[in-house]
Length: 196
Image (cartoon, rainbow, N blue to C red; front, side):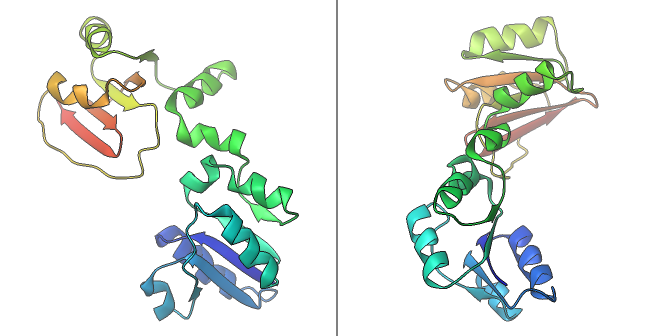
């Protein structure tokens, strides 16, 4: 069986490496991969995870049997749905299911709807209402932009600093209760932390 793994990070490297050891797998390629993967004998091809049409063509033209999608962004963009529509087997959630990773608000609503334990939260679309809520109800708190964080972080503050929270707005955001005395602001691809 020939397998295409989509992604370029450590997760996809480990998955490709494990798949290569499978007795039923004859070939593993990663798109776009990274140079470290090649050092482990993993094939890579320079196709962007966001270029669904090119990936579908690559799979069909090269006789791949199965696709594993690692990164959240192509999943949120509906790549698994596109593969299914093209008659290609792919492992990963549908676009609708992937929204749990792409929208904090959707995830919180899902947890609330099905009584899945989670921290208390409120959703705001302006800074003043969110900071008033935190001052009056919840401390410590987590501020999260309603978007994918992509794992990038920074730690610039030691106390609640609402100036840093401004980075979360005017985009849609959530405020979560947090045990342990730490507050976090997710804004686009930044996380600003503060501890009490």
